[in-house]
Image (tube, rainbow over all chains, first blue to last red; front, side):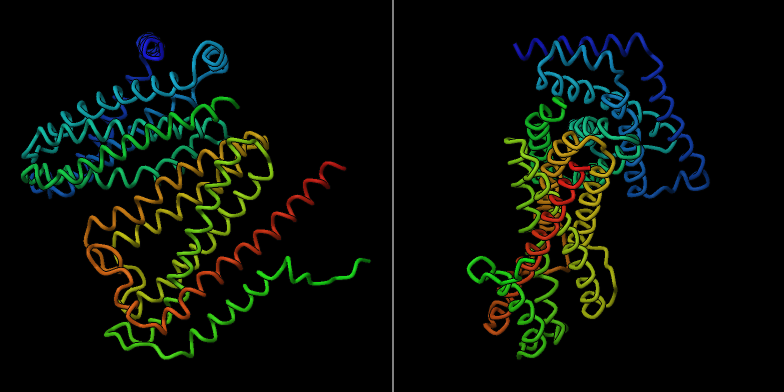
Length: 222
Length: 228
């Protein structure tokens, strides 16, 4: 029942996204522009770019693009659709579908970003499998935190500023651990070195999703 | 005019709070402290820095409990209490940061060092300051209460990994993380404990007292608004 509801909501969301392609295209263009800007800013040292800087810059670009991409999930929802959702769907189904949809969106952003980023700034990643796993887990966490915060911020005035204020500190522990794992992947360390951190990352993902599902109905009601 | 009389049976804890805070300040500066290399006399800061963070944790956790109660009962009173507990927690946290920074200056040689525990503490303050901003930017009272409660729970859930899990995963100068002993070196000394535990209770009670006054003030203010 819930599963079916989530499924149809995601389908609905994707359909709207497809019809209004400007949103996703805008985000992808944003990503490309940011990457290109950083490429040109680093131009003189592209070949000698320190892997640590490469890694940090990548995640910061992903973070900012993710915030921009997810912000719209509740904040830019117009009143008519809000009431429509309110009357037909279960809040838990809504938050789950939004999180899943945004995860999907962030995965597209992440992998497209990685491709373009490696194209211009080189790719020092040694263990691409670990890096990708990390990207997937990180996207789930980012999507959950940002979706929830978008729901919170949408209820307030000046919600776009609030979105950043609320999300950045909350997302930082996640970001730090993601950066650490991807540094391991960059250095090509053995997987055993990152097991603890991967488990911790999974735990954060699960906690964030659980908290979001429990708390979202309270936000939705108002 | 009603006579101002101190009812000992109800207000004993306020007297205790005054007593304990004075005790912390006076005894804290006068007792004999063990000589620990580098730390030396600055170990007295433990009665301020460490105990303020302890009582901050107590207050923020109480705030969390009231937020959960608000969500389950929708009583405005719970929201007021949760808000004030969070504010007081922020003030104690900021004081803890300041005293910690002074301590760092005299033991590690810098006002701020790049350390997992310190950065975690700073991020925590950012999370809770965002809570204040969030509260101020919602007009409707009931909606504000509900959303603030939700964010408060969220904030507390980030606080725990930031302060207690992440610093343990990395190296840290700060005691209690990165394999450093927590209080073990200090625990050997009973003199320190004699002031340390009362000081936690003292700061917490003082905080609760301020909170009580502020909550009462807010209730009166909302009644006044209802009249006019």
